[in-house]
Length: 166
Length: 251
Image (tube, rainbow over all chains, first blue to last red):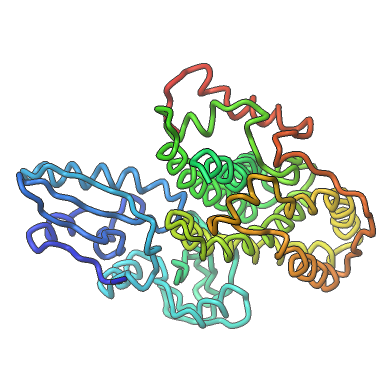
């Protein structure tokens, strides 16, 4: 089972222009939710997307946005939601992680650091504002299910951390 | 094994997530602190999201022309196959946490097995849900330790919740005839095999939380056969009101 997204070159730029509705600085490509995009005969564009979390309310919006954008470029869009293989933060691109940080959300760390931080054992998540690692867990869940809330003890800002999901 | 067997089996799993999801949604805006409020609502969202995946599959399997919304909102009480534990009310925060923890430990173990089902849809849903449920289990387990090993009042309330909800734990491992048929076909999970490790996990955490394990031998069951406690009707009327008043709505 391939883990790499399979996206047709001619659709890539179009899909790259579709933002995540909750984190608009992040393209759905950078978020890694687009798993495949294929051009079929008669200008049909088939796109498979996978949810970050089962109940992610953004998925319906993402599906609609993809359809609108593809239709604008003359394609007949077909969007399918797939569950397998399940989404992982590993599919988030480096560009996406940087965009997150610039936006004020700490990007997901590796699994070990993530666990240490979320169990409150070690202070390892760098504050996206001041880079200090002197940050403490406030809540394992934050504004959305995919994030946890931390507070920086140096600059005193609270911030969201995008939880590692592997 | 027929499609109807499979549909009934899915109800036995998905209705737990639906009803518990609905129950903890009630805390939206009413949680004891902002963080717990948000956490519980996030967990409700996970559970309802998982439910959608199961019900979409039911709609596919059903010979009738139905959608996931029909499955969620238009069944009668006896047609819901959730266990009694998940329909118990949010009496206080200790009840919420104990109910959640008792369910999360089971839910995690069930999904771990379902991941190896012969059914590819079950595999996919289980793999996806496991990532979410491991967070739930951590949240409810941490809180239960905090309550048990906290103040005199939090300990007393946690113990009360445990004593009251303990009678509903055995039903988690009750296998209906349908469960047995689907499990025999390699699609479902034989939950009787999970029972020992379940109680071992719960016991170990309760000890750590300095809470007592009830020694009751009496357990209550019925939900898996559609026979519910008096709380179920209230949840359903709350949940189904919109769909029945304005038919054809999508969730």
